[in-house]
Image (cartoon, rainbow, N blue to C red; front, side):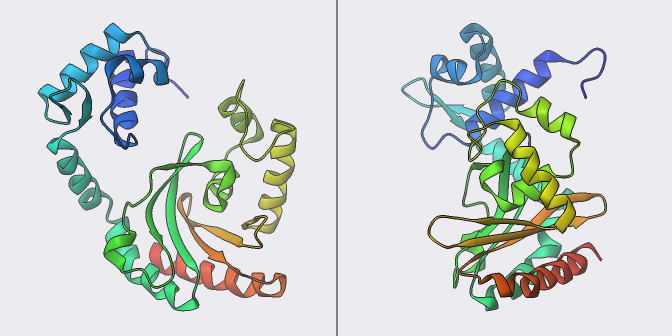
Length: 235
């Protein structure tokens, strides 16, 4: 919920910064303004300010990308949180089951994965290798979305198409209520892959997931393993 007098400049500046972090290539002012539905002159001022701080950087072609200050922010956030450091040994231990292992957080209507490891992938390659992902297409996104009230979920998706839910908010809320009842999120894709997720923390701050070929009879087994791992991380 917004405060009574929100700082719009701060909000827009952070929005620009977040957008830069998910751009695979340098982006121009007008293109970024279009993506964010902001005035180009405002985006230009914000990017110039971020570049002055070293958090953004301007290329010779006058486009923008993240700057060296972003690495400082990333390192400081890892130190301040402690979550990633503490969870890594337990995430690595989950890989012995032969599934994709993921740990992530919900950001608005997206999931940000700070750990996403294919079977057999070295730990260092699994860190921060993906950008933002639609929450409704992710078991991690859905289990964390279920922590919101129906009203808040409706606000998040107001006037938006909902990936994976062509009938809109009513169809999504049916799935959300099912997740709340089960205590876990399960998504089965068309290629027979199952993604299973549980929350970490009380109240939840992140979620763990396993994804791969999982028979219906194995769901409870891996739900228990995920829960035990989540409890170890939290302790």
